[in-house]
Image 1: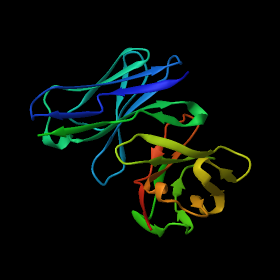
Image 2: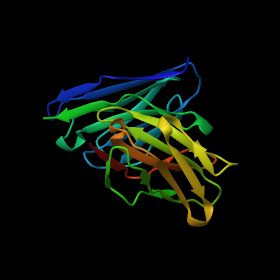
Image 3: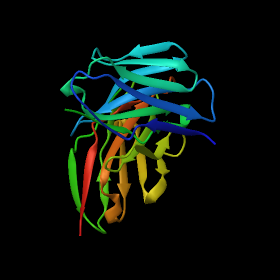
Image 4: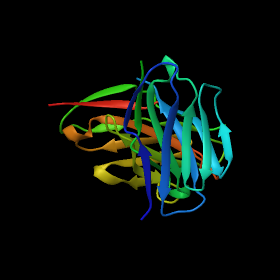
Length: 111
Length: 112
């Protein structure tokens, strides 16, 4: 079956610490993958998208980076977290005409 | 460039009453349109989608939406809301590349 996994579900990290969020999909190959962020009371902000291994497009300049080391793996990272990086992070898999399938999200709190 | 506007940030509706969420889009060609629902602390779930054909589409959980090209709208409706419909709702538009643009969302509160 086709599924998308995202972890961890919640994360509390101190300012200046590194970050690694992982997203994997199953049951498909060469998926288009996206990272979104939701800040409190705001909509979805597209951070990165990837159409294949090693191919990353950044939508907004920021303190975050993304990598696609394997076909079905998409990682969101930071070397040093800022308070403003707090939010709800969502990974999404583009299923073409069927729309996006979203992961269950990661609640990141930077303290 | 494509974009989506959801004019209502927050809507409160009584349980059993009807619900309509507005969505206006901007896109140069025939769009693909979607409605998603997000419960607190969860990911987004697809409610329904429009590609072509019948402009009134049915989705899950008793929702429907109507595509009106002349008004560039894709409003979501439900005849009778349940307390479990309290959530945030997102409208999205995409084109041939399927890359979606999302609206800012509408939060629905259901009162007893």
